[in-house]
View 1 (cartoon, helix red, strand yellow):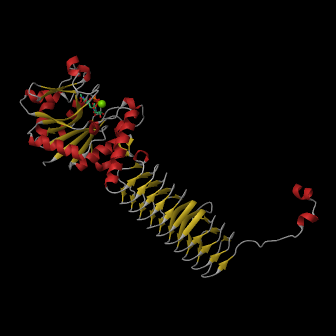
View 2 (view 1 turned 135 degrees about the horizontal axis):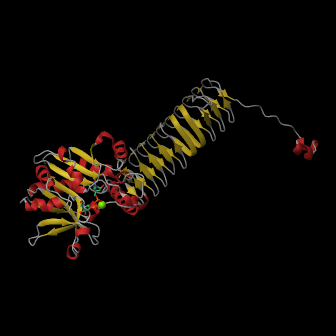
View 3 (view 1 turned 60 degrees about the vertical axis):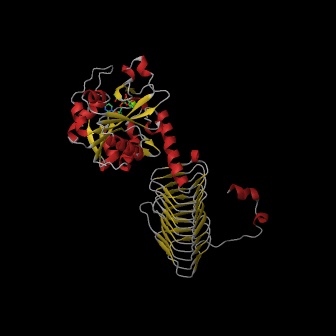
Length: 460
Ligand code: UD1
Ligand code: MG
């Protein structure tokens, strides 16, 4: 396939979104709409991608970064005008120019590749991506001559009653021959109902000049554009369904795909089962044979094979093979949990190494810590990592047993094989293989109530 440039139209206001955010920066399935369109270009092997930006262009450029190039269209005088300001970036040769819209995120690389193949094999100067639509109101209509050849595109506001009955619509996406496009743009006017430069008029101009134009029809789902929040939700649902089907085809069980929210970049191994209400996002990788039980949210995590996670939140961390997390655990960034570990209910962990086979089964906070292998943290252990000014590190070596309701006041080290009595507040190093008890002794006063006046005691 020859060299290709993509121009993504993204300069418009998107008034009907009723938003301070430019339309193309609204997210569908966790990703900017514009970024989905860029993905489509990348999948189709497009070498250079330009976004044409105007309204709130700084926000768009900041969000999308240097992954793509930008062309400024400071006044938006129509889709044709958007291309007129792009002319200087187009080569005067046979390069393919894909024109796409930033608010149609369902376009995929496969559809674009097929359209370009069709464009090249037909020797076209322009190929319009079209679809059949039951209710085409609002879209440009594809007008064909008696031989079924594309003659022009007519906009809703300019069409005759007869033309408006046409069900084949213009997606607003095209493939052009760059040199022919440049020539035709010079002839574009704005004599129409909206006094705009219509890109769609290029088709009639090319036909008059004896250049070949054609259509490439696709499923209406692929070209759906977003103009309102209602349409954004519709597109979101389609994207989610596509992602979930992709994983199911690869051997993942998703119990209720309508209630499972997986973002595009997430990878999942075979025989993993995902229960309803889970959100998997960011650069998350999930291994094979995992069970992700209901309502877990996993962001930017690496989960090894055979892990079970239930109703827990995990962010920016890794979990080793066959470990069990939750229910109701909160794993905050920079945790590295080993194999066969157990993190139980209401355990919070942050910036911590947690070794193979170690357990924190209930109600525990582990922050800024190195915890070795086969350590048992009893119920209610707190790593006291903050002194009001700074955070400090706690080290708990292999095979340590920490009794319930213990505070480990950092910086402190608990050496290998030692044992801490329940209720202790540890402030000093605990040597290897020792028992540390750091609490006051119990004082028992026998027959206390019998010898004291109950009322007086209570009043004290
Ligand atoms: C356009 C097409 C119509 C097609 C429809 C598909 C024209 C004249 N009409 O109509 O045939 O069925 O898309 O959705 O092209 N934009 C700019 N600069 C501008 C104007 C628009 O970048 O000066 C961008 C918008 O941000 C948007 C896209 O171009 O992403 C389409 O513009 P819009 O005004 O929505 O065109 P439609 O009237 O929907
Ligand atoms: Mg539109």
